[in-house]
Length: 403
Image (cartoon, rainbow, N blue to C red; front, side, top):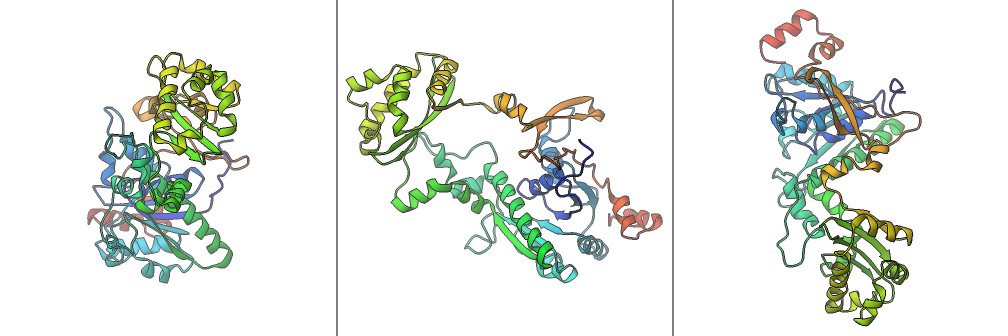
């Protein structure tokens, strides 16, 4: 099965991209069979090659974000290096870059430069803020996307200061949107012959990630309730909330108002809620005091039992419930493993087989294939030979630091 072509077999992408949001779209393309050519600085490479190091193993950061791609080293400050880039672009379907806005244009590989070479080219550009606002000229990192896009409030604990998280949510969501955008533009180019520039940003991606909760916030012109997701109206309430069991193990459940009484009876809480005058979930919406009392009572009672038993009881009552995993627990979750969301990859040169990201998709006819990140300049000779450079010229370019 592994020898079958992926759904993007035959597509070629050339990228001058670094960091996470700029590289993950093309790692995903490579998983699905595309040929991705990563341009790196001769002798140095992408500086993230040295990020996230684990003793006796390559960079977890670089491996995760650049698996399955090919590495070509080019000095784009030299005319001959830029000439080689232009030759590669002529053969490509997609070009990607995430330089600070304006830098690509100054250095000869902006969209207007490259579309003259290849009118069908899909040009994918990722920025921090988006290019049109007052801060569009600034560079951006994941923390900027999280800070400005509102995601810190999604996990806010009442009474505590909002904070950005350790997982690169803005980078990853931006990368996935970039992936989707470039595929849409690629389809257009393949069907109409017209290429185009596609832009997205860390801030834009995080705002999109806020989904309907942001819509509700804007329509109400008020920040949402935090600490638990209380939705709907007093007549049709809903609740999604997390609690700790007696051992401090957290879990979550979500229900609509129609399931509330059944759920509370299943876990044995309903009579106490009635005694305390808080058996109606709609009170959580109409009264902050009642909401606090309802959540407090649930927290008090759930802390008397075992997480696995609570989850089983709620699920048996038809309520959506699940344990809240740590990252390490998530990597061994039975559903994660069974669906291939985490897989294993052998690294013979390091004598190890380790867990890696699998594919978030399952294709019945054109399966994804997980690769490894390239050595710096590993594909110089292969790709320059394809462009017509003979062995002596390749050696000369290397001696002069062009590649």
